[in-house]
Structures are given as structure tokens and as C-alpha cells.
Length: 332
Image (spheres, helix red, strand yellow):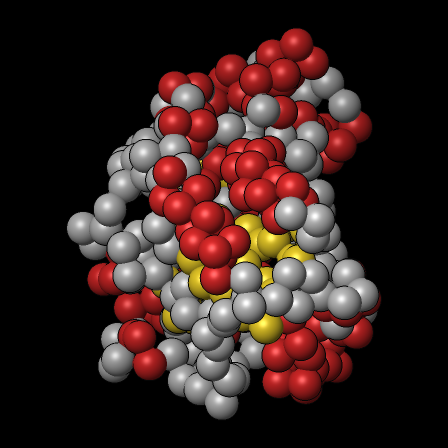
């Protein structure tokens, strides 16, 4: 085992301000989790945002033949839990796009392995890995009743990233026999009661009905439009209801510091976004679904508040469709 190399990796992580991580054997996940993900697929619960090929989702040797170790790292992102009263973005979107930040940090760690002749691949959410299950298996945190990973220091306000390597290291992992027992929650069911679409409380969550997913969906039903209630991108309701998120440590990662236009969104500015005006949003995690979706979500909140948008803002057929639907829904 490469204990000296592992120590260098740990020291690098601490130097980067990352103190919540774990190492597990690369071959330990497949057998334990295959049934769980297969059942999710059979129930048509997988979304368009995730890998739907179960084999690819759990077969790490397909990602890297000869892989020996997975490093799972939690990145805290919350500076404070302020929520703007006139429409809000989920806390995870307020700073720089986490895909870019997580990858940049992990590449620094991976380079230590590469310098010693080992292969190392970095993963930052936009991949097929079942990150929460890797994190739980490697003791980074525990999956709660809201199906989010909850860490000791930062609660569930963390991003997850991984490094897959062919370097053998000492690891610590646990099985999946208690994966859905949510022991960390005790008897608490706050998130189940708070969920705006009532999808929590069962082993297999209907992720397609999660409000965070709905706010990012290009097409939503009239019933779903009524549930936005200020949500401009993402949700956070189950996280805000969780007592394990009270008094957690805040992030020291400067890239995640909230941008003013995200923390204090201007609905009219959002609804009337130009291509040039959209550029700053592309640097956050809210920009990947495009300008029109942010405009639509701003329209929803404006019209829910009884305000009619300027005609010039309804600049596409897509926005016009939603504008007319919202007129009827909110009796404007």
C-alpha cells in the first residue's frame, strides 16, 4: 500500500481547505448497488440528468480498467442561508459553477498521483457515478430521508467530487445493508412534511417530481407552475427543514461566495435578459439550461405576484406559450 502517497494526498486536501473525504476500494460498489439502481430504472424513476445505463453507473472498471481506489471529497458551498423574499436561486447556484471549481481542486490532487506514474481521473457531478452512494460507502457522510448526503460539519450543503485511480491505498468502506435506513435522521421527518411535491418518505424517490428538477425542466404542467412559489432555479426546501443543517460550518472556498445578482435577484432584469445579460449567469450552475428557462421562471414569479411583464420581454414562441398559460392560471 502507498501510505506515503496517501498521506501526501490528505495533506494536499487539508491545504485546499477540504477536510471531509474518504477512500474506498473501486470494486466494492457494483454488486452492492446494482439491484437498487435496477429497481429505480424499472420504476421509471431515473431522470434525464443522470446516467440511465445501470452497468455504466456502477462498473468502475469500465471507467478505468485496473482501478483500485476511489477518493470521495465533499466541498462545502454555503456562506449563509439567506433567502431573497422576491424570488430566489438555490444556495448551490449562488457562486461560481461548481463543476468547474470541484474539477479544478481535484485536478491538483490528481496530479500528485500522476507524478508518481499512476492514472487518475477526476469526476465532478456531470458523469455517471453514483456519487452519494460512493460518499456514504467511504464514510464521507450519510444519506438522509431527503436522499441527500449529510456530512458532520457541513450538513447537506456540500458538492461531491471523486478521483478514480489505479493506485492501491488503504481504504475504509461499509456495505449497503443500511443504505436506506437513514439512521442519521433518527425519528425526524421534517423534510418529508416540508417537501412541496410530497415525494419523500419512500425508498425510491420520484425524482422527476422534485421541485429542483421541475424548475430546471423545459416543459412543466399547469399544476407544477403553481408550485414554483419564488423558486427561480432549484428548491432547497428539504434542506432548510433539516435540523442537521442548523448551525453548520460555512464554506471557505472563495469561488462559492455568492454573487450579488444571484443572492438578490431582480425579476424584471431576469425576465428581460439579453444574450449579453445572460453571460454572468453562464458562470454559475444556473446557466446550463439556457437563457429562456431563467426568463420563464422569472415570468412565473412576476405573474404570480400579479405583475404583467413588458411585451418586449416575450421575445420567443416558447416564452409566449408560458405567458398565455400564466395569464389564465393567475387570472391576469
